[in-house]
Length: 346
Image 1 (cartoon, rainbow, N blue to C red):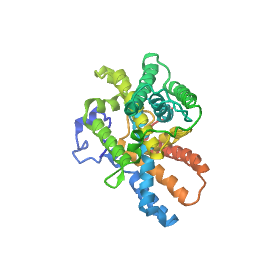
Image 2 (image 1 turned 180 degrees about the vertical axis):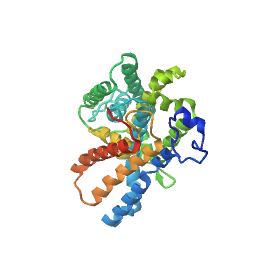
Image 3 (image 1 turned 90 degrees about the horizontal axis):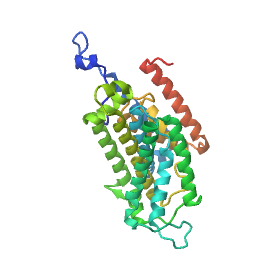
Image 4 (image 1 turned 120 degrees about the horizontal axis):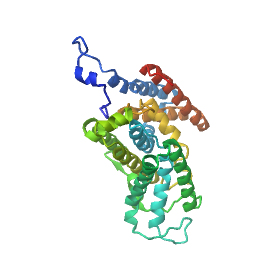
């Protein structure tokens, strides 16, 4: 299962797989990770009832392809939330990273978007990923070195990066994208979009890291109690910095896939996505307080959200209602999580 590791109390680890009286103990946390699977099945049935086109190959491939870019943002945000932090700027990174990369490699030929042409075209993808990593590292500097509140710091970064994108691209969409930059977003591998395989592979790698690598498991300890993690010898700031940079790289990679899928960098690319990111993470069981959640749950959250939108679209519901639905899903998921976990609220 993808990312099934989670922080456990010391007495639970000592007891092993049995309860206090020697009886086998049911791991409720693992069952919770599967809670959205029946929801996805029900949405599939509703989708078929609403429109027979729901189960067509084109529609289902479209749903999973559209889930990949959002899924990568959710993957990055999930890692950050598990470690007890928050990053709102991923919404802007998915757009500004491709814009800056293309600005540096595209020559000026009198096109609508004129680049500097300073670097070879083949460097566009590495540059895009590097920009994402630098944005994440800058967020880490603000939070960990300057001790700025994470919500405020990344909100400011979101706004600043959105302005940088608009300024560099002069408010226009970039359509003269190099073919090499488009490949991953439009290619098909083994009968499915390459982006889907790449997204699943990254989720699998993330899940294995959280489950089996020492630094991956440390994220739960950091998110649950950072001071206790420090006392245990975990390098909290260093690991948190790496997670923030990794999330920035994932957001930039999502920008590459999105650009390749649609053949251009839209002027409004990523606008409002952060609400969908948090909706998918929350309904997938990722705790906003840190230290709890799995990547499998996050992935099912992404699929659930995309299926809801798809069923609404096939049912003729105007897209203008999508934001209302996303907000409603977040609120309902928070209420369910509150009573299911038994956490006390301040």
